[in-house]
Image (cartoon, rainbow, N blue to C red):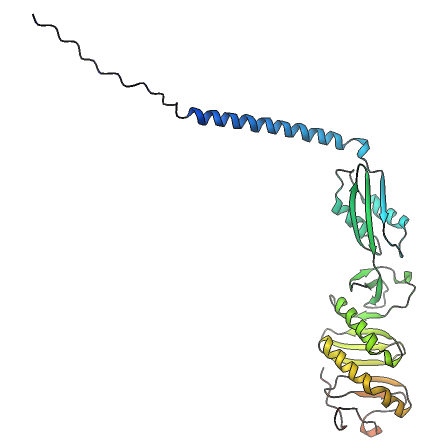
Amino acid sequence: MTAAAAPYRRAPKPATDRGAGLRPLEVGITQALAQVLALAGALLLVAAAAAWAARQPVFTLQGIEIEGDLARSSLAQVRTAAVPRLEGNFFTLDLDAAQSAFESVPWVRTAQVRRVWPNRLHVRIEEHRPAALWGGADGERLVNTHGEVFEANAAAVDEVLPTLAGPDGSSARMLALYRALVDALAPLGPAVDTLTLTSRGSWTVTLDNGVTLELGRGDDAEVLERTHRFIATVPELVARFGRPLAHADLRHRDGYALKLTGLGTGPEAGFPTPRPTAARTPAAPSR
């Protein structure tokens, strides 16, 4: 008797877990998400607490200390002009806006503002120090000792100031050359009243006795060289003719032309133009 053949059965495949390889990643993502949510919640709580604390009356600004050598403005004037423009408390005050508020006060050049815990401000002020009037005769613009143009009432200045008149943006250069010319022209006696720079770069000095000096064009070194050459010889010429100087033109290449009060200039007046070599009629001005 033949035994019955066992029925054919397919061998079962080994059991596999298709998600087994992803479980560590899923767990990591879940943990990271939980941490992020917890951190976000904590930050929200901190922000809410900070916002609540910032609104407490204890942080309302209670005082402003102003420091600086004020010569043109009083503390009362600074406070009256700037304090009403301050907005916020110790935490919410915009320091840049506060600085602008103080620097908008006439005569204030710079203001450094810092917080003082828990409800005060400290402000250090530097005033403009006037060195010259700027431009025309409106009396509203001046040049400070840094060569910066600012607006203020010149009537508040007790000292006599020279006038600088030139293109916009030239005030610092003009102040530097003015200071050099004051020393260079000191032997003449009268002080420099006005220094003018044209748009074409030509310099003119007017002394406080009305004498004008045409210095011509060029960089500062060239202008000063012509001025020193002029000062080295002109006192002797003025003394020779015994008449005050009225006008001088230094724009000639190798010399200068003079006009004395009550006396003409040039060969027809017997008044030669000084030159390093033999005297002759000066060349045409180089403008």
